[in-house]
Amino acid sequence: MRRYFQNVCIIFTATTAVLLPGTIAVQAAENDELHEIETKYIFGTFTVGSSTGIEGEKAFEPETEANFGKGGGGRYGVSQTVLEYEYTPTQYLQIEFGPSVSYYNIHNVPGLDDRNMAAINGFEAEFRSVLIDRNPSPIAVTLSLEPEFHSRDETSGAKVVNYGLEAKLEADAELIKNRLFWGFNLLYEPETTRADLGQWENETTFGISSALAYQIVPNVVIGADLWYLRHYDGAAFNSFTGDAVYLGPTFYWKIAPKVLMSAAWETQITGHEPGVSARLDFTDFSRQRARLLLEFEF
Amino acid sequence: MQVSHFLRRAVRPMKILFAITLLGTAVLFVSEHSNAQQSASVSISVKDHRFQPSQLSAPANRPISIRVKNLDSAPMEFESTSLRVEKVIAPGSEGVVNVRALAPGRYEFFDDFHQQTRGTLVVQ
Image 1 (spheres, rainbow over the protein chains, first blue to last red):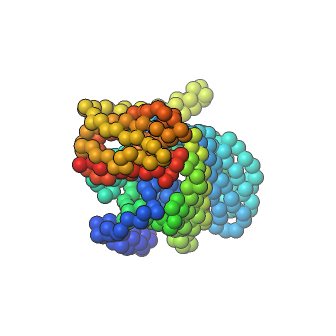
Image 2 (image 1 turned 90 degrees about the vertical axis):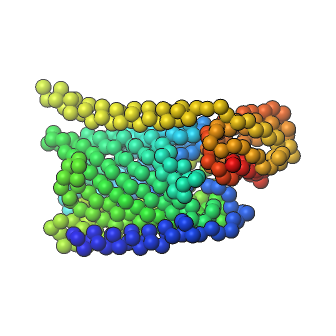
Image 3 (image 1 turned 45 degrees about the horizontal axis):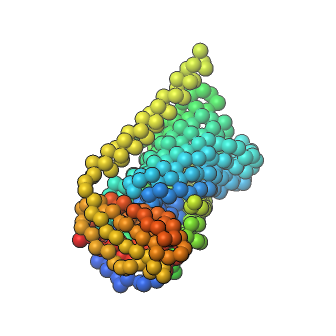
């Protein structure tokens, strides 16, 4: 386990070593074609930027996360779509809420029941607040609190009662004005779940991410996203059950002044589960994960 | 008995989540309103889809009130990503955009209905 943790530390240290001096040193010439851009979705939505939107802005945002692949063969595909209404009441606060719909396609996966079904799966809300503005600080930071309720297990689709709170620090820096951005997220997500046996069980996910986003032409941004996730039983990191590193490309396109899309596809490149010799953790995490978000402002 | 036990167990996390959410929201509003102070006023016009003047100046660390006059025959939307404001202004009318206190720097703004119409707020 120590070896995996060291590897992850090396990856993050290398990324930071490359990027942080750039934050200070790079003062590239402004490109007249490029203008200020909201950073919230430019990192592909696994890593979220610090922008909290524009005061009075309202938007509809269908956001889908899909997970593919579990170890041991079989077919595993699970998606969850949140139909979010987003509102920015002040220049400091953004609110989102909406129901979620899940789809499960599970066949011959060891440890999981076969399932091919769709279901309305719960309700999520999100409150985002600016903690540190970009100017004069080179790094902007936003706090996000996302209370969630789900009636189906996100991995297996089994009926449960699940409450969670996804707390995130969402930071970013503009390395080259209007051109190159660095994003960083810190995640703490405690959950409590009541399954068939009637017992409430707590679990926690901790995560840290680093992402780069480059505006190649006006309103089109490409990049890469790196996540390190650790999963525990218990609400306060009680018992470590596994970790994983995800890496993949991101894409952002502001299609029209009031319409945008953001997408990311990530692969588990390394992972660890105590007592298991495999080099990936398929119990707590999937082999692949993807997100697609559309935003329609009105 | 089991149902009431279940409800008690289910309601408790909801209460915690609700309390956290409420606390967070309260902190946000308090921090926002603690910055209340007299605002500085600046004015700008839009004619032939150009801001006049294209560059505004305002003092740092004070809220700013921007009066925008639309002299064109088409509606415009004053918008800024870094100022985090937007306002639709009908043809031949004017509107006021209130901006929080800002640190020194340059802040872009534009007409979201005519994206080539752009200007800069210089805060010093």
